[in-house]
Image (cartoon, rainbow, N blue to C red; front, side, top):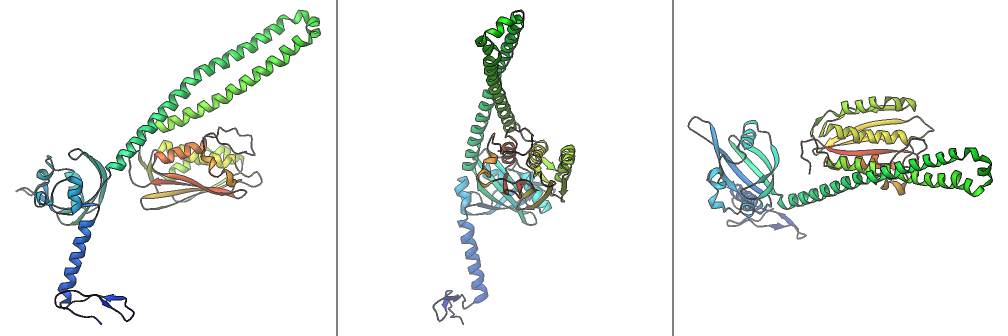
Length: 409
């Protein structure tokens, strides 16, 4: 089937000219050579920096350092250090640092055999790296490193801009409340003054009734104008309160920890017990995987979704809520399904917009903030949120969160 050659490996083609296979005169040794060559080619052409190390012990068999025993070409591209100046040397020599960089973390991988991942800023190189660490054998470990300096700098810039915008939003909305309170106060004072004038005119009721223009001014025109002012002030007050709430959500630092999600949803449902009983709602909560996040903010996120389901329920049938989750790839997707009114196609993307409000069949007032805050909190958790819905058949809200510890951007 194969043509053999003593000196080289030859490709053989089938009758149709297609490549059929490889062989050689000395198959075992040659195939081994080919595999080694392919591995070395792949190893050196990788964009990731791969470095092999061994732990170094002192005379009392205490780990004190580690030695570089192999690396690919990306090592030089990322660090600027030539291979010949690194391989066979101690980490303290190569990186000119004492103790050796991340020694405790690497030693833990060697001892436990458990992989470890982290992101870090390395001052000697002035770069950010994402590093995966594995142990291929006793007293050995390998690091696979990506240079994330450019993306990290972009993230830092975006984060700084976002914080600047959030601060601007907070200061602006906070400062606007002061003149708004003045307008509201003087409007109320003007209404009291109008009432005082009417009281003073009581002894002259006959003359007052006879002066239709004066009466219309005091009883219709001025109260109507004050009504417009009061209505506008109240609307502005709601908008500014919403902006302040949103900016506080964005400014609040995350307190990331492992959250018991089953317990969290049970507490949210308990907090909404009165509203749910009032509408004869049923809630089914599956066994839920845990995630990492800020428990207070996650409570707010899922509370807003459940509030939304109660508000936009179908009055023609009892409300049903189903809470489930699936996990994989270091993430978990939580779903909250309801049998409510659903969302029209034209509004599906708008529901995340600040102050957007769909028409609700109930008298429950809303500011159009709930889902905007949901989106903001999910993004702070390096997650995302979306909805699948059909008008008249209910909605399913999906929230993606992390199953490993993380830091806020």
